[in-house]
Amino acid sequence: MVTEAWDGKIFSGGFVAGGAGTSPVLAPATGETIASVGQADTADLDRAVRAAAAAQPAWAALPYTERAAVMTRAAALLGDEPERLTRWLVPESGSGQGKAGFEAMLVTSELQAGAALAAQPYGQLLRSMKPRMSIGRYAPVGVVGVISPFNFPAILSMRSVVPALALGNAVVLKPDPRTSVSGGLALAALLAEAGLPEGLLHVLPAGADVGAALVAHPDVPCISFTGSTAAGRRIGETAGGLLKKVHLELGGNNALLVLPDADIDAAASAGAWGSFLHQGQICMTTGRHLVPRDRLEEYAAKLAQAADRISVGDPTDPANALGPIVDQGQLEKVHALVGSTVEAGARLRAGGTHEGLFYRPTVLTDVPLDSPAWREEIFGPVAPVTGYDTVEEAIDIVNSSEYGLSVSILTADPFAALQLADRIKAGAVHVNDQTVDDEAVAPFGGTKASGAGGHFGSSVNLDTFCDVQWVTIQSDIQRYPF
Ligand code: NAD
Image (cartoon, rainbow, N blue to C red; front, side, top):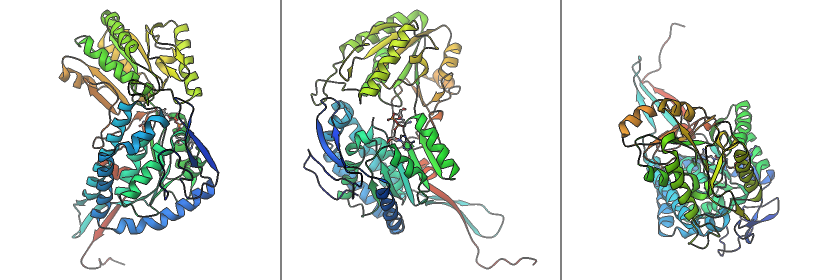
């Protein structure tokens, strides 16, 4: 639990002990140190889990109104002053100011939904063959381990933390080491100010090693992980071997299908937003644009125009819509994918260059279906476009990805698109919108390599963050033949 306030610039020793010393928090746009954060080791993890397990039963036993009140107060604090998060999101995660404001709004909305979740029915009255009351009810698991990524650090932590707490659990949160403040410490400070009792939320700024120790910890029965498919597979293996409840929200390679009757101007605007928002570093980023072959040229020209118009630079300047790629390693990966896809035969229509970590929004057309930029999740501001001849063929291409997170269908006939949605293997299908979307009250989760083990969103959270208990009650002790 964060106990210190910080002055807005330097925050040291965020976690109780910081057994692994302190590390600087760097702004990717400038390379400047913007904070200093205590780093947790596995001894800190043990202490955090013990404290969380000790605090949890009293929290779960409180009237639901008290858990809801903490969420309501935190939502009000953040709603009134989104800068509590945006002043960290912009420099620390390289978020454009629009994206940062949008993310703070999503966190506020998650907190409001958390307050409502605490008040919802938490079970069912069942029919029974015996004269008794039979109830299926959800009980908190105890301590939930949350591991989150760098890209939308605040909401992707809070999407697990808020429902877990609202349902009566304690949480140990390990954010991405590049976003320890906006993905952890600033969130814990907000909840502490809103009255969350001591011991219920612990933030462990640390790398994957402490994340792996959290997954394996014997007193953490439930893991909620958001991140890459590769890490998710390893976490799933460990958690599965230990018979833990594990919830994995993983990568995506999301298709935007432009149907022959679609308005191409509007489609290109939606496509540009879907591919370039936050430098394409979103699991739901539009990674594959499918356009009727005879409309490809018109679509590609408009998409390239949109790409060329976008200003990219230090996001502390509100004139820049896009900021930097998170780090050098990720930049090199993006650039290599673009280069190898051009070598495979794609045409570069916009972008493909960078200055430092600032990558220009990039449009590739005639992208071969077996090229790296089509097959893989890029996690950069790159829009790969290809043509199709029939809608049947397009649906097959949409479903041919190993991922199944979000798909968009753009058309003048939304009800026909609804029938196509029946055939699409993805956790979300958006008709007449692009692929990036999430709401606290909607069920969110991926299929195939995009996720397993549960969903987020209002009552669905009961399955994800609770155990089910069957309770029966009879007035007298049942007698048996023995
Ligand atoms: P990553 O998997 O490398 O890291 C995510 C988090 O997991 C970090 O906190 C990291 O320290 C930790 N971690 C990594 N390996 C671990 C291990 N073996 N055990 C325990 N913890 C471990 O992810 P990234 O590349 O930094 O983030 C981007 C990825 O996240 C993309 O693939 C993106 O699609 C995915 N993502 C998915 C969603 C979703 O809702 N489905 C949302 C955002 C991002």
